[in-house]
Image (cartoon, rainbow, N blue to C red):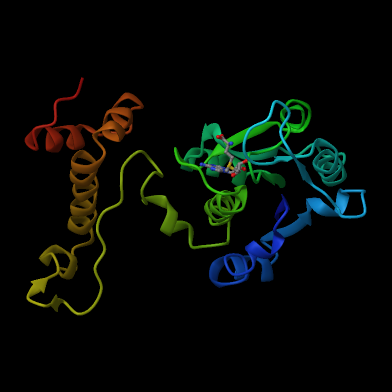
Length: 247
Ligand SMILES: C[S@@+](CC[C@H](N)C(=O)[O-])C[C@H]1O[C@@H](n2cnc3c(N)ncnc32)[C@H](O)[C@@H]1O
């Protein structure tokens, strides 16, 4: 079981994304556990103040060091799990990182809010910082849910392993297109090979669609897949026919 400890000022934001569908079933099956911790519970003053004005002036509020540090220390315990801050200036979250985190027994996710947190907590207690993209959210909660969702679905048993084997970003290529019944929709038939019953031809078509789509949409991924030795001789011949020049 993979346990996610999430530290947040707004635990109610997690209702919905974590209480429906696959994440709900994964918790019911004890494949993942989700523990929400309200940082405000560690604020010791009468008003449970968790933020304050920034030193040096300027707009916005900053999450105070003491309540956040107490919350992290109380959550971490002796097994030293990764303590991950969601932060727009962190390392960009990828499928490879999702795979890595899915191997862990426990992951602590810290959600910033307002202008962010007192830098000293980052220095003292955060072991890794992840960004979900080059844009700024109001808080780390949505980012934590993105990480949680992407990691949880890679935990064995959460979804059918075959679903994750050839999907986008699993092995350097994007996924092939999908179709379902009816065979013709608004004068658009499905590709004939998919209804041919020839499994070998279907597999070949899917591989080529993955190559074609990756070349059209993300040639940067194709170059990396080639460098990492993920492309076969047949792949390279097909890509050359499409006009791709490997470097
Ligand atoms: C308004 S943001 C703070 C932005 C910060 N002042 C800056 O310029 O880098 C508040 C919180 O949202 C979260 N956040 C915002 N954008 C994010 C992103 N792209 N990825 C991960 N977390 C993000 C972080 O936890 C951050 O502390």
